Length: 202
Ligand SMILES: Nc1ncnc2c1ncn2[C@@H]1O[C@H](COP(=O)(O)OP(=O)(O)O)[C@@H](O)[C@H]1O
Ligand SMILES: Nc1ccn([C@@H]2O[C@H](COP(=O)(O)O)[C@@H](O)[C@H]2O)c(=O)n1
Image (cartoon, rainbow, N blue to C red; front, side):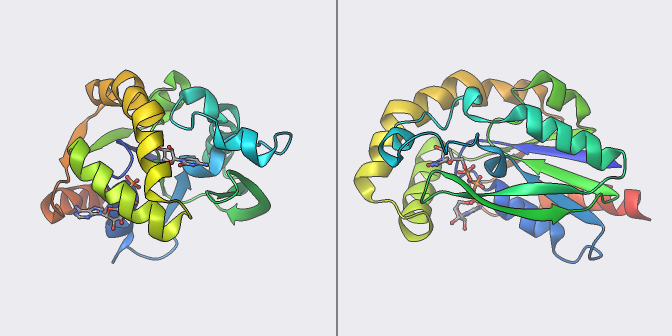
């Protein structure tokens, strides 16, 4: 199994890059684990308490479960990937049955901060977009898709997102094998990653 880790700040385009990679590749050969599915279970908290969580700090992620799932897939076992709701700030209780594939992609803002997980990646990719571009994208996406308003996004950006990005995410570039500049759609870089994957699948 070839395991590719794709990191980068919120709104840099990780999900978009993953979807571009998956386009035209043979169906069922490449699987995806999203760090967002591994936000810790917060069922014991009220909604008002959940809203206040710092979702950009590594402690908000259930890395133990993510690592256990990746190890299980590597051994050839199926896993049940949790489904997360950005509206409820919690897991929904549903799961998605995920089978091992020849190539597994793990994507998320903080996946390179965890040394055990980082060591499992054969290729580490960091997607870069400037912070103003990421903020604009995040505003548009969170308002249209994640049930937020402008005040929520900007307050979260100033209080947690920006400082956590500087403290935990940006320094992870140091570990990257490939940095994809993504202020604009970058088909050249995506095609290079696709070529590497196709070689593995051949
Ligand atoms: N290169 C790009 N140029 C313009 N918009 C982009 C680009 N990449 C992604 N987007 C848009 O920005 C938003 C955030 O992208 P997404 O892939 O969800 O980022 P991430 O997964 O890193 O948070 C989405 O609405 C997406 O369509
Ligand atoms: N309940 C939550 C959980 C996370 N977030 C934000 O999501 C961002 C990470 O996801 P991307 O798809 O943007 O990489 C992260 O910056 C968290 O602030 C949230 O808003 N609510």
